[in-house]
Image 1 (spheres, rainbow, N blue to C red):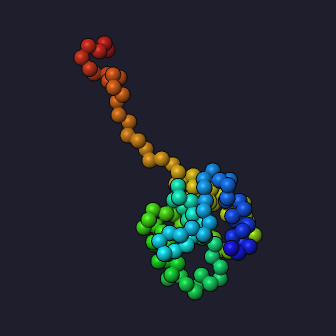
Image 2: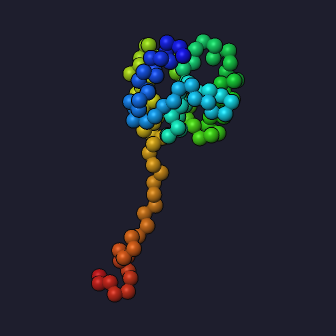
Image 3: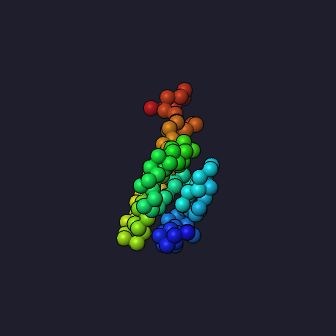
Length: 120
């Protein structure tokens, strides 16, 4: 684990953002830096080597997305330059992903207005 990953992990572990993160979590044949299984979010810290492997990262992100994960990527120095900003972006994304789908409103049994014998 890099110093940058350690710094970010110190603020992700222990459900400090309200969800459980795993570090160096395998997903298929890939290993994600940080993974939240619900809601499905992968957080990656990209060092300079990622500039030379854009095609690989694109395939990797496509795999994660095909399995329902959102992917957030940050430069490897971001936790040192603006840890609170990185955490805010992650927290905002988690909040957006955790919003439950709307449930259609069905009439409650016995509460219908137009049933026989109902007074108007």
